[in-house]
Length: 397
Image (tube, rainbow, N blue to C red; front, side, top):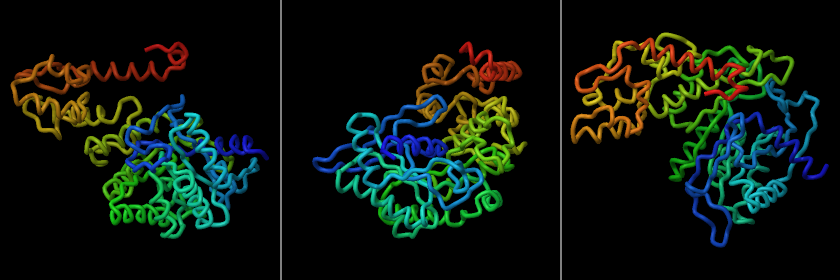
């Protein structure tokens, strides 16, 4: 099998892992080397389904000793298999980089022989890139749960980002559908990365993937779990992947991949990380997110007794809970009102989404809008249009 065939097989096999977004990093360049890991050195392009395509995203191999029921590459599946050596991957990365095809590498793999053996191959790849080719660009590598602490630390030293996929949202689901994997070992790997970063003053970020829709966990359970990982600083990002039904012995809970649910989970996750919401706040009256309304608007409607908010008096934590006002706008509001009362024109210039926020605010002692029902009706109509097949075909606004 030639290298082109191998790449075709292994790049296709990697498409099920979405934890590959590159956020940039700060890495010193090698003298006379190539590539840059500076914050501005990682470019992003996105495919139609939202996946990051700016990286060489590939598996080292799709051979695997595990038989996870949700996985296309499980050992019992009758599929074409391939294997790339560390040197082949390093050569591909450098050649693609020189041609400006990519800005970095995302490397994952099936488990061959053992976690340690697979991690040793990963380490060899990273060493060729960093030391032989003096590559200073972006490098995202998988941590194989169960691999030794020494190997994990060596990978962390050379990579810009690492990830260890939890895959399923609960220990119960993992034990049923991926009995070869250990949730304890996955979390142990993440903890090793955290401790290494702290002791070596390194800022190697970590991420994971959760498959959504293959098992019956609620949105509350999923987001609550993410909240715990963020609070413990074990993860910088959780990626939510709508389950694609690839194996007959794991029936999907939905006939189509639950892409809308995936989208709402990302919105709720955003509230956790940037708006300082708690999972209890987001799910105060339900266990699953509202499909018709985004989580922040749904929270505001559920807690309408807290509104309207006086924009000229409210503190930062309350301002960012107003639909249509984000962290940047809230900071601008607080800075600007030191010089006088703010009006509608001021808020427009600050980028506040008045079509939403005007239903939840007071300006100069007066409520701007009274009937929040108009907003709900408009948002539902907008959602219906966006998700209607005919509107998708026509590309209507």
